[in-house]
Structure formats: structure tokens, C-alpha cells
Image 1 (cartoon, protein in one colour):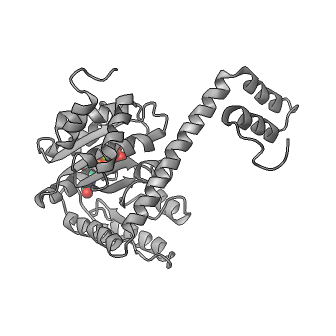
Image 2: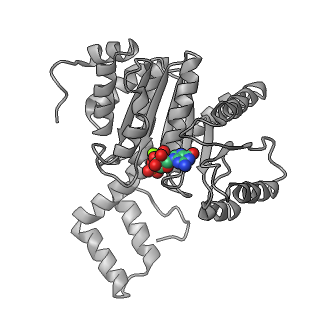
Image 3: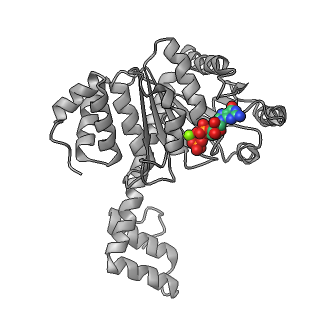
Length: 329
Ligand SMILES: Nc1nc2c(ncn2[C@@H]2O[C@H](COP(=O)(O)OP(=O)(O)OP(=O)(O)O)[C@@H](O)[C@H]2O)c(=O)[nH]1
Ligand SMILES: [Mg+2]
């Protein structure tokens, strides 16, 4: 799909800067489709970004992430802050229809001009989900959104790409999210900044709370102790308290001069994540397209060539890298 006639690079940038919904919607579609115009747009807007505060919301499927975001949005809209919400579904190559649940959960806010909500799938980004999320966040930032929520489903690894850019990470659990506790304990899942245990009316909520507490207590070195809040998203119970904990984390980062450092690390991490994803895609394509390289793999398979010699050949051919492991040719 080519960029529509009605937006040029200039008019799109101007529309985004003005917070125009149609321009925003188009810009994020361009981002989602990896259109060249999206890269130009973000290049133009980037110097003006860095004002939005990004909150990553992650957790297992169905724990109530969207419901909680909806309740938090209602709360912060009461304070008059403008908001963007990006829901990323790593399992879905398409955005339309796939995130119907999110749309219903967040429907209360669709008519509010101060709120922009968008779901994105993971179709064909060379730079993976990190790329799409980063670009979408930058567009919303440039549009003057004071807060941007980034929702992604996850239980440990892939979602890090999506929320790696967040200033504050909120992990949402519910009674029964035992796998996440195990992942936290094993260090597979990074310790978040704030934890919500949603569906607090469930009889097992207190048990869950104690389990999370005991896992967090293992980490005594951590300067910021992640607060845990029991919530009921559909009724909005403890949502102001949850928001307060997010605000406390933000205030902590500011007071300790950690926000700049975190953003620097996050941006470096994003650049590496996107570059790595692209390098991997490039490598896979190069090997698929090159008969000589594919033959190397056959030779490894038939034990004529050892695996690391094949690696060296591939690195030399695809990335022009010579013997970086120092083993000699
Ligand atoms: N009883 C109860 N139900 C809730 C609560 N929060 C959410 N739900 C329900 O749980 C279901 C899933 O909620 P969502 O907000 O879509 O959860 P999610 O984590 O965004 O789900 P995915 O994006 O699909 O991973 C919905 O039917 C909600 O109405 C809660 O606090 N209590
Ligand atoms: Mg959701």
C-alpha cells in the first residue's frame, strides 16, 4: 500500500505535531507497514520527542491488562493528561480484528479526543516488534501525548522487545499466574517496577500476593522495591492506588537522576534490538538466496565441514567479518 495522496511527508508531520487523529492513525499504519514514509516522518519528528512518559504493561494472557489500562486512562483523564495506548500482539500478524478484546475493553475512551488508542500486529518488520513499538511511541510522543501505555502479552521473554523502551514497567498478574512467579524466581522474567495483582476478589489473590512478596524479598540489593497493588480492573478498585505507585516510581527516577540514564540505556537497547533483528533477517535471507552458503550447511550435515568453520565462512560472506573468534582460518 502506497502512502495515501492526502498526506505528504510535511503535512503528515504537521498533522502529527498538531495531534490530529487522522494524521496519527495514518502515521501508525505507515509504521505498522514499515513504509518508507514512516521512517522519514520519525526522522523529522525525533528531535521533538522525549517528553512523553512511557508505561509498559505486560503480563500473561487474560489477566486484565487492557481493562487495567482502561481504568488507569479514566483516572488520568480526570487529571487532564493526554494519553496514547499502543497494544502490541506478538502472536498476530494482523491488527484488525485480532485485538477485538482490547477494543471492547478500551471502548469507553474511543470518543475522548484526549485519548488515542491503537492495536498493532507484528507483520513483517525487519526490525521486529521493537521497531514497530519504538516508532509508534515516538509518533505519539511527538503528537504531545503526556502518557503512553504500551501493552503486550507475555510471560517472560519476547515482550521485552516491546516494553524495553518503557520508563516504568507494570507487570499484571492474577491469582493463578504461577508460571510468571516461577519465571520471576528463575530470573527468566525481569523484575518489573510495579506489580498489580488483578481480579483481587478471587479467593487465591492473597496467596498470590504472598508468593510475589516472597520472590521479591530474595532480591535485597535492589534500591527500588517494586510495590504490589491488588486491583479489580472492571470496577476500578485500587486503580488510583496503582496509579500512585506508578507516579512514585516516576518521581523516584527523577529524584535519583535515573530517568535520563534509564532512557539512554533503553534507547541503546532498542537500537541494538532493532539492529540485531535486522541482521538476523539479513542473514537468513542471504543464506536462503545463496546456493554456496546453503551448500556449507549440507557439508556440516555430512560432516565434511565443522560447524564453526561454516560460521566463519558465512560471517565472511554475509557480513564481511574476518575470524573474530581468533581461531584463524
Ligand atoms: N472478575 C474480574 N474480571 C476481570 C478483571 N479485570 C479484567 N477482567 C476480565 O478478564 C477478561 C480479560 O481482560 P482483559 O483486560 O482483556 O485482559 P488482557 O490481559 O488485556 O488480555 P489479553 O490482551 O488478551 O492478554 C475480560 O473478560 C475482563 O472483563 C477483574 O479485576 N476482575
Ligand atoms: Mg489486552
